[in-house]
Image: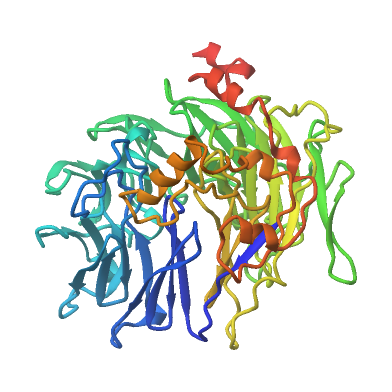
Length: 600
């Protein structure tokens, strides 16, 4: 494992945000916005903010990736299409939003809230592209769409939610050819007017109303586009009951889904409560619905009928799955041991004047990139992670941690890497690795081992002051041929972590991410092809060597980067036939091997 410490040296609130394509990372340190390259770790921009800017109530957002540098004064020399990249970044507080462009140091856009009569800025995000900014006001009074080209603004009244974490709104997904993280054109937004839920479908650029649909829900909780942009899933509040509405892309109600009747009235343990989470399974063929009854239902998009049930039981007795329980000794050393089945994980504590029935249901549900694995958490056993194999339709591994699980994140490019974060006071993460060819029919399969424990307390200090550390961790969106990386941090700093070591930077790779002319890249490549310089070693060969601080210096990473040895056996993640398998897989459904496709 290697870590690079790029923590700020200021004793002030710090916010960090990597770009969607992992080319840069932005950090708000004191009264400055610092943007650093994730290739060379050099400081690209150091932007001073006005004294009136409220650092404590700030938020940072990157623009959606764009393949063409529209802000460049001259077109690039190279004829090949440039990879998608985020070129703009915004930093906002309660009253003002400022947008900066990495391609032009002199370009700046400032959006002021004016008198603030409609409330403070709660959520600020880029719109469908880098020329649009969406701002949600306080008390869900309005959402504003700003055009950075024309200065035109469109007010959308009575949005139901504040827009945080994409709740209640979303752009229709675009094709993968438009880039990683690219957004479509039509905006779907939930609104609440005179006690009635409304679905607004807004046109691109102009944000004119394409369709205004009065929903049949009593208290809609969210909206989700399918990845192919054909369907909209809207679910009702849990207090209303189990109610899921499927709409077409133009706003027509296709089907309303309710829970099947149980054989016995007391089977679910709780009656009257419905849906808690909704996620589309990668592949456009399946929709997963997590309920308060501790069951995940996977629906087929051909009929929107349940075809798979993933049940979470209070007592674990699954002979085909491996169960690992975290142990902590007197010295604080963490390890995993195989738990004997049947195993009973700890239940959520019941508070005074509370019932245990309210602390249950599937609150976290994550699918890997190819939709073959699913990780879930049931609130009744908050320390337990269920990892399901959707080919064999049964649990593959069950992890019982010492602390409640906070987040489950699959790597965007590597479908076998799962990052688990719990509510520790120290920066401790869990990295679960699933071999793509492992079988779930035997608990003795060596590839279904316990997760690796990443203890980063020696690499990043706790924040200064009496405020508790708010640890956060997320994957960087690296390419499939690159080694995975993540960013871990708190209010006052962050570090970059490579669990398998860093990739070696080839000499002909451009060192300046913002140099679209590519002079250094072309000249260096020409020298290699003509034999003037030796061919640098490939990444696979470089990964066989140690990844210490000396290697980091040879690879071109800036001085001062610290490297830490660890995580033996990472070479087992490499698979020569992985690419061949993906190439021959085609567009087959993840449930083909289970025979479910033959039912529909």
